[in-house]
Length: 165
Image (cartoon, rainbow, N blue to C red; front, side):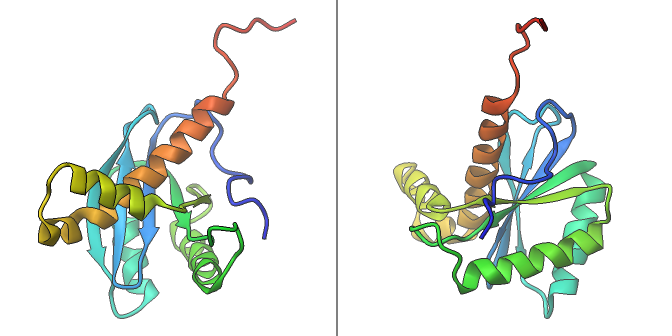
């Protein structure tokens, strides 16, 4: 499998909100960046519909309502980095989503290993009750994944202090 963090995604420094998506079999976690693409925040949880088309219409509505300029979808790779059944299913769904949102919105994959574990640990440390954690963990995991993507892009951006030679 190609590097999920590479590709033709939005360039660093490009403005506009980014939607982070954590695809689950029962729920889809949604996170949203600020317009400067600095901070990711949990946004919502979308219960899975009867088919992907229903889910993608709900995502498209959010893209329009929030003026999203890019989408980052978590790629559930195995701990070794291999692409298993969940990653292959996510890749298919990413292609479907690209068709729905159109060419103006970049849809890229980003490694989501350990995002749910990080989200669960964070919510547990906040002493959130188990039932409440179940309600929010998907959107928090989406925010963890999206923040990772934002940080990676910021780290690879050329310094603003650099002068061309």
